[in-house]
Length: 247
Image (spheres, rainbow, N blue to C red):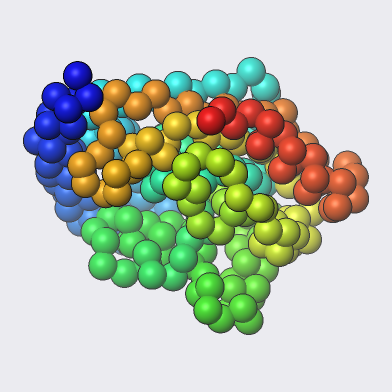
């Protein structure tokens, strides 16, 4: 059965990448047009629909995505979405299911060019691109990003592990990025988010992809950043996220 599943995964992985490539190519000029002629709101709507269609590229792999939120997410305040990180396939579900919070991402600078739609949105949609080899640039850009979240009541998505976990087991969380966002978005709430099983899509690398993966995104109770010291806040957020990871 496993051998048959792996054989089937090859054509379905090709189909996934064809669908993914089609939509990011289609929405690249749409993003440019909406931003240039209609501004942020129209551009943001185009990105929402892009992420909706990108979910379908995962569905062809038999992927099931469960989004769980039993908490009331604060409105009209900035949010800092803190999550574990297992694969790039989490980005579209986060962007779609939390679209009302206007999610922007802390991303590595390499993603800012060469990828249709994705690079354009990262550069022009309010996200931040940091150079992990240049700490001064990274800290400066994160400070600007925090101020932007505070000003616009957007949500910023940060993965404190830095790089994805290839086995699902969480890595150590780094304090630096989150500490800056908390400093420059003092009225924000942190929204802890746990992601499970995303790593199984890329357990064999980028090809072939895993079939029938049950990805789960679980939102935890929001925490006001000014409700406790940063040290206590950081420990609580890390513990909350990691305690819900299933291996």
